[in-house]
Image (cartoon, rainbow, N blue to C red; front, top):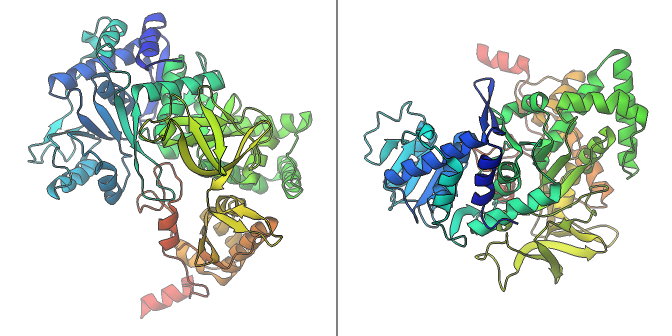
Length: 585
């Protein structure tokens, strides 16, 4: 286990200088950065920042898109003893204000004009009293601003670093391993985000645990497309790739991840439940629409998958099934070479797990927390469901106190722990082969049979319907409430097949037939858990990071979702004829 990330990074540049450290797609083209080039860029950036007055103890906010520049600047700031505060570039301004209020930054680095405008507004409001410099990477629109804090990012001369490994080691020798390297926040799924302080030791321990748990090394292709400000993405994806000798793969955008997967064929992929479920639903719908003999084979495969799910068993694909369907579909998805397909966050829909299992790939569940800087536990074999036990990753110790999961280890933030133990707030039980985590402490919902399930379990079951993209379940004043986001593409295809008329996404959802379909889907899913829902609400508009209903890692913000606009039952619907008639008046 590494004490800091700098030793293995420097060793990689010295031992394998020509290995590809980062593979990034920009403007439609893949470009490679070698280990020596990456470390030289990090050292040159660290030197340039220090020469421009950024130094040890400075709090540096990074409001940047997830690309190679973001990785380099993150490492460079830490290398000179600065404290990194990451902010996803698409974060709404009120949340940016909240993220930066605990120890406001002295320096900020922004992508371009949109992020600069937000930081300048906070500066004018007095929310950032200590900000003395804001660097921008993209000058378009920003270079005309008259603000005295604005400046272009310093010019970097990586070619001037003649011995990158030695230069990085020299800078790292000045650091205190126990000093705080990054300030991050909890996800904000169930409450407002709270600050988490992670030291150099914490970051190195989290990355080291992932490398050891999943045997990452040269030859692996590790794809990252989530915000690097998410400590789990840093500790379970980005740093493990760079420290292990693997190649870090950075797609051009979130929208192009699917294409990038096909082009690169990652061997290690860490997904959000939302992304994994969307991918499974999209493929199954395309299977249903395929014609000819190929369509018959795919629809038969789909039918067997549905039967397995309804019977509560894990699909066991035959050799013929793997050859005719699994290998073909995995190749189309770019998953034909994946060794580890991981999902962390909220419980994933059982149907999505079954989908990947039927293709011959085990979608493994991991337990992650901001306070651990990455993964704390993960499954390593067998079926992945709600009752699947997870084992602590190397270096982490787990236990259960009064029904609550507790953790300790070198990756756990000292600031978040009490007597060395982190109280997670999640309910769990210890079993022979690990720990089963079901949901948040206190969010149990009674079943008709006298038992109970957690709200997250119910929400995951609702998302198993192809017509429901997201769901939030909560108890309000003693009533069980479900708020669902319709899967627009699936619902639209269904409505068109029924000959129903609608003009907009809102009018589609408001159709009485759509409302009935969604209610039926909700009742069917809840019935499988023996749960009675008292109130079902359908969101009027999709969830998004921009309006604060999703976190930067695509988790629903429960309070925001419960308060979001919903479509009234029985709402009037504009048909094309109605809209045209009004336009003529």
